[in-house]
Length: 339
Image 1 (cartoon, rainbow, N blue to C red):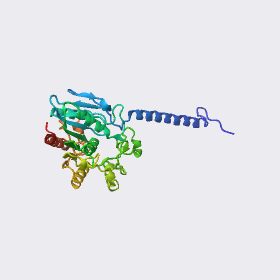
Image 2: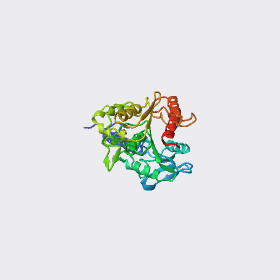
Image 3: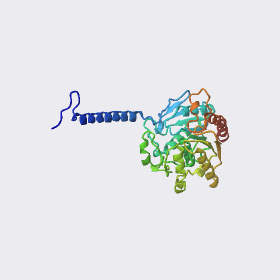
Image 4: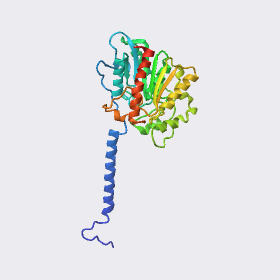
């Protein structure tokens, strides 16, 4: 016979029920937290497409999404400006476009993914988007179509060198912390899809041959890319054929880059160009700078200043690199395009 519980003591039969209810509660809380995490996506960067600033116009012609900053008056050199893996048109890309306009270059800051009605991931992005953007820029009355160039940063640096290899008519090419190869694509909104993603780029509806990421065993993201580069001998078709470019090329990189090995890849571009009779390639490398080594100077009172060392190098080292290389970039543009 079962002994009845003492007064005030719960029945043994109630424990499994209470345990089940408790586990169910934990599962519900976990599910709610997971749903909240999914919508918040704290791991994913915020994609913005900033409105055009003074003197700029939004371009949506021919399926493009861009901010255009024309130089008033007669036809000026034209520049296609490409941001990186942040997608859209960032505040900093838009500010750079305005600075270039002020220097005498009609500039088109292009969103090539991440914007409204655009692919959310860096996956099979059509290179024809850049062809269309260059054609649009060349057709503008404020642009001298015989004096055009492309500037890209990070993933946009990879794109700028691809664009240069497809458009030998370009007179100027600047790659900021660029790549020497076409990389496997990424989905920063759904990172668990990484293993199933092929090339970042496509052409004529086909994936452009790419270099897969290597094994990532933790540490800085640069290790993922370095492991990929270690296998480059098996993926020679992923190397950007920079020898097809017609313009002298300026590359800027940080030796302490923790995003990807931008200086190693910049030197690979230079070596390939030299070995294959390609254009002159100049590499500006900075020891105490990382992924934010290149671009317009950043003042100490700018909100971005203290983030300059986030992906390698010190804040001061990145700031010094930018203060030094931006005038060199402008001098290069003057030499190759005039103003």
